[in-house]
Amino acid sequence: MVTGRIVFAAFLLSAFAGRVRAQDTAPPPPPTPDSDPVLTHRSEAAPSLPAAPTIVSLTVPKGTPLQIALDKEVRVSKVGQPIHGLTVEPIYAFDKLVVPLGTEVTGQITELQSVSNGQRTLRALDADFSPPRKVKVDFSEIVLPDGRHISIQTAVTPGSGKTLQFVTAADPDTTKGVKSVAAEKKKQAKQQARQEWDAAMKQVKAPGKAHRLERVAVAQLPVHPQYIDAGTVYFAELQQPLDFGSEPFSAEAAASLGGPPPPGSFVHALLATPLSSASSQKGDEVEAVLSQPLFDGKRLVLPQGSRLKGTVIQVRPARSMSRGGQLRVVFHELVPPSGIAAKVDASLEGVQSGNDQNLKLDSEGGAEARPPNTRLLTTAISVGLGAASFLGDSASDVGPRVSGGAGGFKLIGIALGLSVHSQQLGMAMGTLGASRSIYVNFIARGHDLVFPKNTAMEIGIGARQEPAPSAKPERKETVQ
Image (cartoon, rainbow, N blue to C red; front, side, top):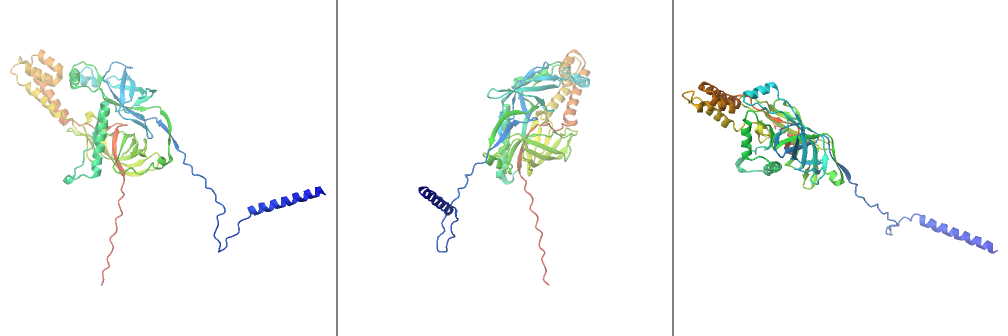
């Protein structure tokens, strides 16, 4: 009897529990028109998580050039001779500075090329019996400001190894003295670029006037040593990449990349396509690579490595009467690392150039090699010495003979004028020197304009404004 009651009670409890569970899971009844809706369940939304940052590799790729200026004069003596220089252009990886301006770089002389017999003969006729040999160098180590020594393998770009200057484009003429905001911004950017170059070259121990005069005097000797001047700049391309680790790059910053550059932007770029007024043709494609990132405030617009593509639109080789070569290049396409190209209008506003080219940039970025500014002075001196050789009355007059010898054959000519008592010889040497100076400075072919690969450029860049479609004039119907 007791057992039966226990079983019946357990059955009732299980039935009641099942009913309660059914009431809990049953859907709520639909609201009546007179009743207010009641929220019976609120689902909690998953909390939004910030996007994971992108990891950017800070690697300087193979082929990136180091611009290195020798900080001391080098007297060339042998292969294996050490050399020392400083970087005059900073190196970036994506948007981070990894090799600062002024970083020490060491290397050595790797080859001293012999001089051809023809060149040696021409030099000998000009009283120079130790013609300069072509010197090849290599750089093998950089020393970062924190003391780290990094071994590098480099190859020096052909055409580099000269003393350089940074030339900026002429300012356009303004009418009525009114200058636009864009023109003023362009002027300030060019001044800043020139000041940065001057500051970089101040690291170099440039010789003073007395030292330069001493070197000029030594160069006049028939036999003299060869020097590489302080400030000579080499473009040394990396043959192996440099790894500086990696760093996070936020998704917000990544989303802002590739946008149009702000109006009036200026970028630092290195020429990837060598140019020469002697060999380049109109229509040739030109490419430059951004060596430094472009920021708009703190926002990264273009990282290092973005490319500018352009075209040679004007070229003229050097011609007779000392007329130098000319080049004009425009850039019309910008390609960021994303690969999505954008049309731009960009012009050359500043460029590195060898001191011997006497380069001039016009307000539209056209470049021209000009004759040296000293040609009038040197020609006047040579003509004066030649004229002085005719002033003597007899072969015993030493002054005219020495003057003619100095104008024709430098120190050897002076020695001949002192030792050989011949007025005719002195006049011949003076005439030869004056004629040669006039020919070289005013009649001979001028210098071609050459921009070797990895030449640094300052490029003004902005979005291209597409011309608005011209509206067709409406036809007017005449009323009869």
